[in-house]
Image 1 (cartoon, rainbow, N blue to C red):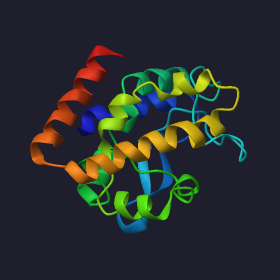
Image 2: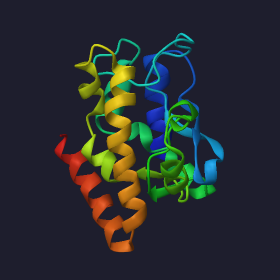
Image 3: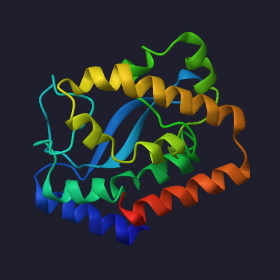
Image 4: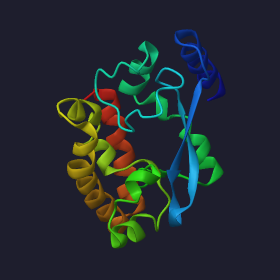
Length: 182
């Protein structure tokens, strides 16, 4: 994958100044934090008060970043996190500490009992999350009050029913969603 990573990194750097990779603290298994890897899709050094969610048409997203996000290519560096043991291919998506602190205690314990993943059923369901949030007058509030409860329900369902066959279906469903574009 290194030739692909190098090509994407070069495109990111050519499109806008700054590093090719983006690192952000996320909450992993048993509540341990780690720094997730992604290809950078936004202008470097956004304002410190910027939203932690991204809406469709967000002016912070670069031209190359928009393509990487649409095709979910920005997530590829998380394969390094999988190899390092902080993530798995399938599992609840890792969230930023701010939002995890809002989860009910029982949900937090259950969801964080497994390694977070690159994809899960909610990643397929909310494939175009940024477009959903763009229609909201307050994207952060919509994320907190509408999406977090729905995602938590999906995460908990995954944890309770996970299996090799189920993970395979999720991986295939994710690939189909990416290749189908919607």
